[in-house]
Length: 361
Image (cartoon, rainbow, N blue to C red; front, side, top):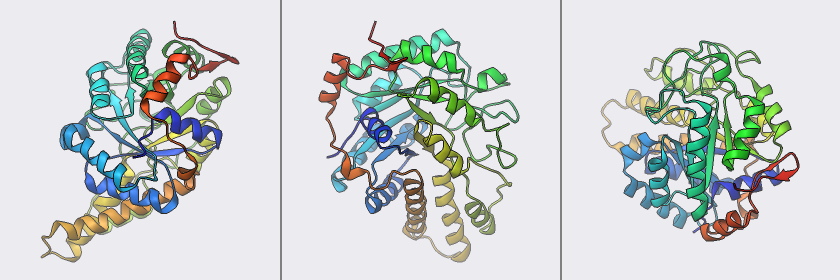
């Protein structure tokens, strides 16, 4: 079974200049849709579960599902990732249930809604890194607070997101601070704030440099060329899906997401992981509405779920192809967690900053 850590997968992505979409999941149908798309184009996979998803599906069910998917699609390297962990317990319990990677989001306090100070973020992220690396699992950290540069606030998703007004400085990751953060925490990947946000309503217009600060990615990559960057809140909210949703009885106001071409631009500047959730939800629920409207007597859930799975599969395939992930799965020789733990312990995976490795303190 090809279970892979985030670090090994993103190292391969960096070496071969591609990005990997990270799709949020809550159930079997989403997992199957992602894996079918991956197998069709020979793409490695990142699936991620939020705390809300873990509560909805139950950790035992999720872990068994991932085991089954890895067995069903043995040629596809599969990383199971905790999205937006709020404390050590969330992250370490994910690893106990078979997750090969975790995100410790120390940009917010444990309540997942109050912005935290820098020292808190460094301290808690470093503690999770120390524990995860000891068993070979990967860690993603976040610096800066995810939210909109248009209205200066965060967006909640599955109970996670900043509340209240956010300053411009909070909404944009500081490149100097990013260098210090990576050096002090030794994270494997760094999520940065640059104007993206959770949910469907990211932008009130087609985003430009004023509200989608791609230059922040470029500057951080210039200073940290070997560090894997992560774009959160990067669903594109395709117009065709909005139109289908509304034509089938939905009431979604006009909105704009992160254009695929801007994500591809980010990939050229060190972005290796791209978080996508809303697009998958919208692809599926637009089909639910379409079936319900066309067949008002239908009550077989499979008649709703099968076209929804197909729509999500097609969307995932599009992202694999656009991000350069397609064709990469068969090139990866997966290492077990034990081998990754030895590499961490030896210092082989210490971050490189200013041309030199930063060893553990």
